[in-house]
Image (cartoon, rainbow, N blue to C red; front, side, top):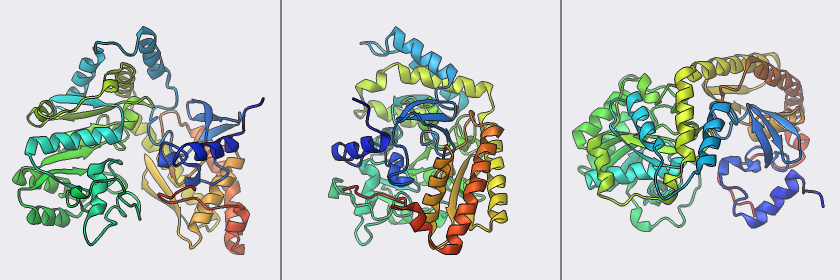
Length: 440
């Protein structure tokens, strides 16, 4: 009996797995419903072979930003295979934990201690638990996206405004299953709006345990913003936590905060930290991290050996190779090529974000249909393309050239669709989703 094709397999998954996938960002509906290949057989460099044996050039998210060195990087794979063959789990711990901690603290001299986890969301929860234990306070001020756990989704329990995460995570996300008693413990503020954070501290004197934020994402910090956050945390006795899950290693060797000369109390790494292998770290000042010994933070699989082996190999390679410089250059080439293409075809295509993490959108009433149509046209030309581009060390000039050549052909289709007003008809199905939505 032959294997089911990739789309039939996904239909089966939607009946068996709530939401269809384990990660919202991997749902085919987020790209092109009924067309995006949900499953892969192999991935090397920046090429993926899907479940049906078709080969695609990945010019989308590279494992949602986790494979900064490229898929199945030889140095990382060698380290992981060696650890697996030697035994990835036992009743004892692996010495790599100590060596990795020494490496992380050498790259971040402000930090003295490290705890490990295996995913970004749980590592952020560890960081928040440590901050609350250290300060004996409950309230967390945050901006940006920081995972799926209760401490964060509690923001949408606020009375009078039950959609506080609309500008940080997704609009219309009901905090079902989050204890109502957590209402008022997660308070959002906007990036580069120091006045909003000041208002939170003023209203919650002596209650704020931590300020949690990314050092950057699409926007640069305005002069004095990060220093102002640091000063507010110092004056109010709150723990300053940088979420480096997406930014870390992509913009600097170590954390992106190193580019700004601002030292947090805690920083969290995941995603690219293990280059596709589950690994996360919470690093911090000893005075703060010591609280981890006073509260219960423990998990069996935080002690397996493949994660630390992958992280050590990943970071060591990044010490040898200028990965941030490479993805900056590749991203700039993508940005310039897309800008030229949009101008040549009079397309309302906008490329925003930073070169190392680009975002594509259409300034048009049918923007979702146009994005979906672009994805479909690129799939037909053997390229995975969504609403963004995560550059990797595996991407070369010839990959950008291939993408732009295919996009040149697709641009003609998009231009015709805009002129005729029939983008939805050309899709022949649903447009991409933009947020959380039930699939049944």
